[in-house]
Length: 183
Image 1 (cartoon, one colour):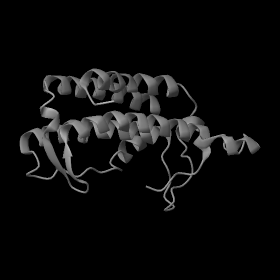
Image 2 (cartoon, rainbow, N blue to C red):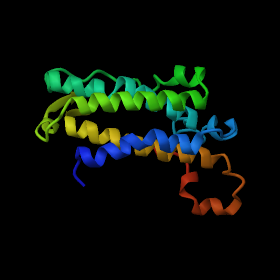
Image 3 (cartoon, rainbow, N blue to C red):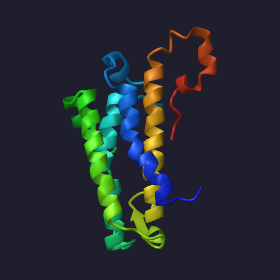
Image 4 (cartoon, rainbow, N blue to C red):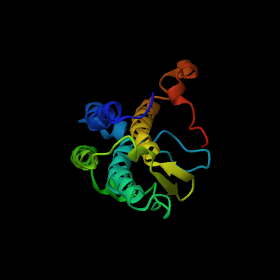
């Protein structure tokens, strides 16, 4: 499937509702615990971390970088992104608060996105990622969609992991319980 606005926006619009439906009013046993450790020994993220991360990316990544690409093209590298910049949010807000913040942020960012009135030609505008090299605006926006889906899946993994010992021998059939894969 090729990236276009009509197919991308429904995913981006729904993510806050999907997370709210999955997480709202759950005990912290479900939302505040990670799913083990990464191959490097660092802790994985909890559902709370993931919601905070999505807020952080909406505030500091997608539209910031889209504006940067439209203004500078590939003549100036995109600003770096702090993958762990969400930690203060996760530490100072409960899940209910984070869900409210995320819903508000997403509405704002999608309004900002729509206001750009991008054309298909705009999607080919090149940018320069600080680590990955040449990218296009269309790739950045498609990544926003996949990023939402990736972290929705990761949220489910974090929650499922809370029963990783409870499922017993069935764990071999439940791929969501497999250890995190190295990047």
